[in-house]
Image 1 (cartoon, rainbow, N blue to C red):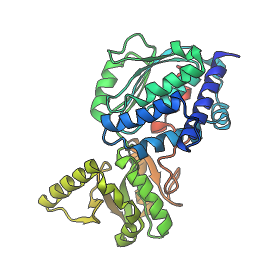
Image 2 (image 1 turned 120 degrees about the horizontal axis):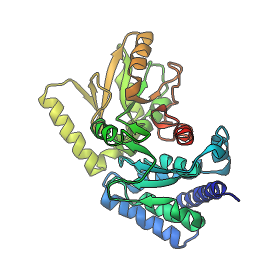
Image 3 (image 1 turned 90 degrees about the horizontal axis):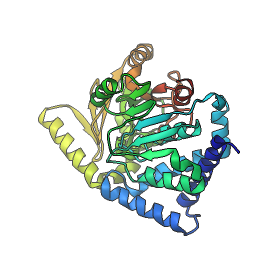
Length: 346
């Protein structure tokens, strides 16, 4: 059995372990205990990484990492063409395991991975790496974590803010790279959405407290849109205000907006503010009124480099269904850049 096949099997076994753990079917053993302890440690190190959100991330990956899903995904690529390389990954830390897809791509294509973790998310992936190595010892020499300056690598994948991206572009200018900047997700409403669809939109807005690039941070609504319908549909998410960090952001942003005499709509746990920007602060959602769907499509095409996902129903090309932004599939590449293709051809 070749090394790539062994790595493939290791990830399939990881998927099984995560599914069993999240569905309370895991056998009480050392790995079960280690993962439970690590989940608790996540919350202590990063207040946004609640047990619920960490388990959501683990469950999502558990459901994705199956033999069928991985085989179907990789079947379009010729992995035999890969020339083994050492690939550096600079990971963000905004949501749990946000850099796992890059990690997966690098190893499944037969490369070595050199990971520089964000201090906001630096305990989950090392534990998962240890599990993978326990399943396939050959991965021990292919997974490296470092807190030092990145050196001796062939390719780099780096994710950060627009400011850090400028640094990355300069620092990694002589190395083949994928540099990811800020992107935001949005929803287009027509007024014809059912309460069920709008309730699902709440998942796109509130999961991970809106910290992910796939979190909906902006609404486009038709003139005269009835926001009462929207507020009623998302009311089930009101317990989010009980999270202290979220509540602090809600209170702060509301105070800033009111002092600036902005016109606001709010329901006690979410602030709606009319604004042309795509990136709204935590506990806030920007909205903008459109008069023509066609003009909106032109606007969004022009701004496509700022947008990660668009949630809509029968409105625009490549739209996502309500409630689906936080469950990306293996071929849902960040920024639309095919990571596997990049690794194989570079």
